[in-house]
Image (cartoon, rainbow, N blue to C red; front, side):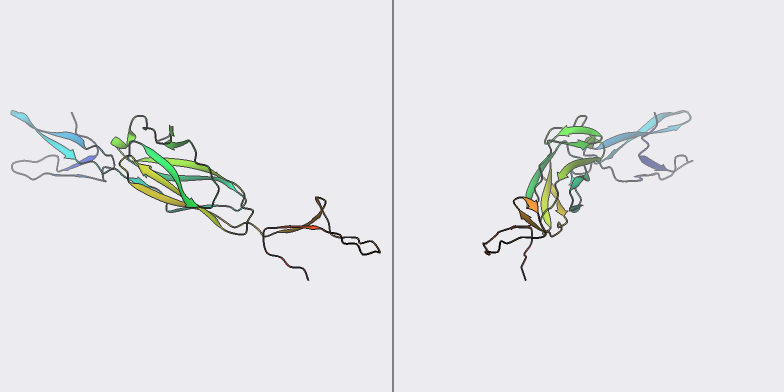
Length: 205
């Protein structure tokens, strides 16, 4: 039986005494150690075997440091990687009004927040995860943000700060609920009022 394709062996043939090097082309990103066996054969000699073990990568979770949303609002997808058995998402500090989804995607399948991922893909390799947030329109003239925290099974965390651009300033003049551009006074000069709707400071000159 051939050895696993993640192992590089050099040389694979020889005559007389020799030294063989074994290595891997890339790191093993799964949590669980992997094993393969080298079989050394020669004519008229009993086969010899060498078991090669590669340690697993410590449990980890990685999220982008930042993400952004338009002032008009949008659906934002945040993606990262992990090799944990499960991930738990939570919201941290900030004034951006978003709702934490009940599920996310890991290794191409939908997973309930905090639940064990079917098949434990992180045992053999890091997998990609993604989670979507619906960001409403920002009607203020201030930038808003919210921390999104992802926690692996072992307790390690990573945080992404989702920032939404400031909305546009506006001033709308209304009377009795309708937008107006003029106002009429009687000859007596009796006071007439109008409403100013705005999200910024204003003055009348």
